[in-house]
Length: 104
Image (cartoon, rainbow, N blue to C red; front, side, top):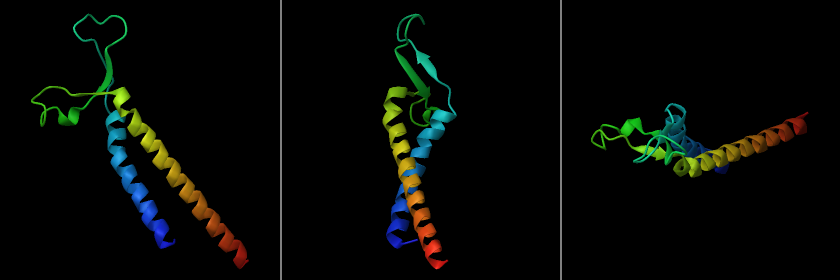
């Protein structure tokens, strides 16, 4: 693999790893529906995910909630990184196939 490709793919994987933290939080946490100062009727004020990792250490026992709308940009970034990695893989495979067919 050419060195510039190695650097670019390594950078993409580093971004993917950082984004996976958000994915894991979402995938392994319950959804919360929060009504502020009113009975649980009608649409909730917040639909969120409790950030249990930070419950004790940073917030003095309060439960921080990540609003699902706030994490949408990270979901979009994750999809973008995955698409870029897939495109790199397809381009690399095409180059390998071209070299292989030239040698036959």
